[in-house]
Image (tube, rainbow, N blue to C red; front, side, top):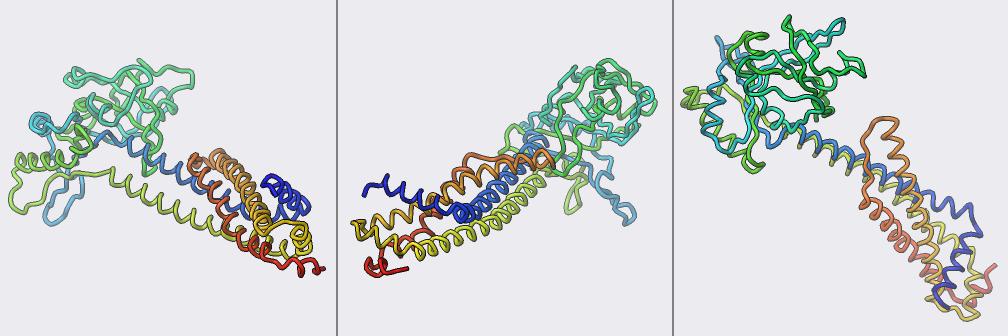
Length: 406
């Protein structure tokens, strides 16, 4: 008996019991859909973490003012005034592993335009800030080194501030905004970046030349931070070591005295979030796989019941010349068809559920072709594995006893 005829017999046998066939496939559909949906959520979250990690900065090195011990009381981070512009110049000249530098002087203030106002972080930086943060402009330009040198009251706005202070059809370029009674002219608008790894709105930012923030807004001569970008990712750690040694020497820190600066690693936070996301994805996928296993066992049980119910049919086929191999192939094909069709339907349901979650709840999802291929292939493998015992049982029936079965 040829394989095509065996396939037709298997398909006809499944078609005779449509309700039972549909219920048998339901477990596979639910299991595959759950796996696809879970993997899609995990892939989407991983993509968002990667995007947020890249948004932190290109080969980022962050030097922050440290704490100071005053009469036994420690002020906490950013409590010192030891980071100066001379430190930045020294790093630029003596640490060749650093490609870009920008000082940072920031404060939380209310920004006002007409009858609109918004509290945000006013951040004083240099033009290199955009290169360090891998940030583009959608409109206008960035202020220049000459603007920094002349303490120009210019500003570049994040998208959130534009939404809060300007009408949707209004161009913010060349408009005036007041910051602590200081009028600032808008010269640029930053591209949208979205939330950071920790959920902070990166688009809620207000950039000015750091000298203008120092002199006109905060009235300080020191720097809060120095942001740097290493030449390559491999140079980040060596660059940090060189910077630490240089600053200790410049600040006359000897012996076991604590540093008056900190080297921060925000990318470590991003990596920790990514690892947590992967762990959660594996956990959810494992739970979803249990339903797939339960559905597979259900198919095996249904196939065993089918062998029992169709004992006389098997005996007749053997009596007219069908061998054990043909019987075994028929029942294997039935199990394979159940799981394959269930896998395809489950993939479609999982894809639709992932899209629905992304639309309704704002969860990032991404269905990868690899996940679809693995889910479909795994369902076919399940059909062969769990269908083999019922098929073997059918193929080894005694034809005479099978014909005598009621």
